Length: 630
Ligand code: GLU
Picture 1: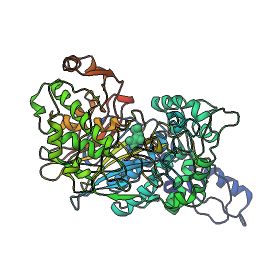
Picture 2: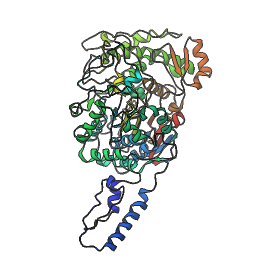
Picture 3: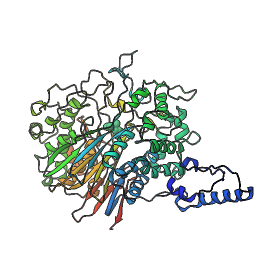
Picture 4: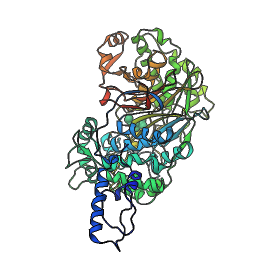
């Protein structure tokens, strides 16, 4: 990667007694002002001119350029797949400098916070699944947002009408902002499983934020979709708009506020974010959103305090795991529903020989299993610190057999009812709640990293909607999440009602698959709201049942049933023979432009790594390896 503060530090000679101003350098964290006592003015002027030249022509600080991207890369030494080439290159840069997969994942995540600021950032949270080559074990870091202490179960009920506040009003408000978890998650992952300090892995991202990046079509489109919201907040229009409009593809934009924020975090650790000026600015933006004067948007304030921020903890949990045709499929447990729902659906599917079926028949079974697993997910999944989640029962082969018996040759009428996993669980028992709603839209980003030691990281993070709450923290360059809209607005929903300190249920499904020998075969994940789950499930089935390589499994057309009457289906399946065959089995299909945006890394039998991203969907992703072999 190009320009970093450490690169600049080398290019600025330390000469006692010089004082001159080099724009941009102070933002790079480099001390450049020194007192002049002895040198004549002419020498001083000459030195400053030279310094400016050195600063601006250093190759590592060349003008921001568009980075070429490719959806697949195969080779050795380390691999990164991300939605965006700046993120992938930032991860690769850290691998090249000797960092491990965790170091590189944090670096890539920070870079994506600059170039994909509406998808996931330090204003939100995420889930990291880590395979350690040293121990052969898989663990997870939960940096999901928490509800502030003042949040009541009826927080999303309009006191005037007694009904849930409409989604867009919940979203664009201080009410929906959860205490961000990402920075504590980074710190925990680095201290327990990384090798580099935070300030080092943040360097590539600081460089991009400071120097700028080239806007692509996706960024322009996403900004345009958020234009009305961003214009209604002074901080968001200052940070993300250019003269009140979306930045155009091909132009360069910077985020110096975010560079400053990253530097503060790098210097002082997560305390710089959770205490002091940034924490105060976050709490201030939530409790008193910086609404543009004259805006007529009704922006409800939230009640986050600096104590809520200071109390935030990233947690380490056991992963979920199911054995599927001799592979171990690891995922994220509560508060995410990703691991349990992917796992339950796989357990149901294990009773069918999908590889021997016509593609449409395999898809029929995929739809039916997804619907059954979603019925259970909607009924039982929530933050396990607050509700009894029958995780063991949901993931048991016996419960799957009971659910599998409901899969027939034709489509079951949907929604299907939740089952009862409690008899297969050692926990305290409980009852199913009413079926919950499932959100379909969303932003989010997933990145996957492998290093030369064999460590693997599968990392999904988000600010919930594309653009989160729409509220940027003034002066610090990042958007706040609207993650609390992932709670059910209905306070009577037992598993996923809001509560103080509780983490809303997620669908994020970062996945790692180990083969029969216990070595990783693939890792992947996706954005896409609740359809994250079906995207991850389908990629797993495409590889483990249908014999596809990871790039093929990612590129293949998808469909997705969330236990609704209709199955969202991408055009290639909808309009092809599969669509006709599925309709003949009684399935109702509706067109979805795209489902998910997957990235992953596969481990090939010959010892090579293969990073893979979308070749087409949403403009395509970026895959890189340290030493390409093709
Ligand atoms: N908030 C969603 C979740 O945690 C992810 C955002 C999305 O892609 O919708 O499941």
